[in-house]
Length: 128
Image (cartoon, rainbow, N blue to C red; front, side, top):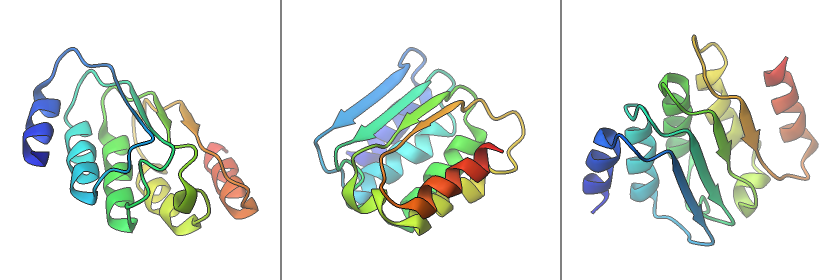
């Protein structure tokens, strides 16, 4: 199933937004979405909130960062209200280390929720 989603998402020419809330996604499912994002030319918004990323690890978040780095159309990601993700700086670093020196990055907005000062500071530094 995950491979099918990846193949369809890569070739899809009309989908502009993926929004998944309140469903904990398996690691393979996250991997499929993130790998497909890198080649999708129309997807603009990725919304994975309310523990959708609960099972994700540094491996999946690195894939997300790589996809954001090369995505030709992604302008906004929302990964707010993901409990473990909200409190773990290393997950955020896995994403941002990929996009920090990206050329032609279209991404303009990252939405997250955290009470951790380190994570907030990390994104403020990225903005600069």
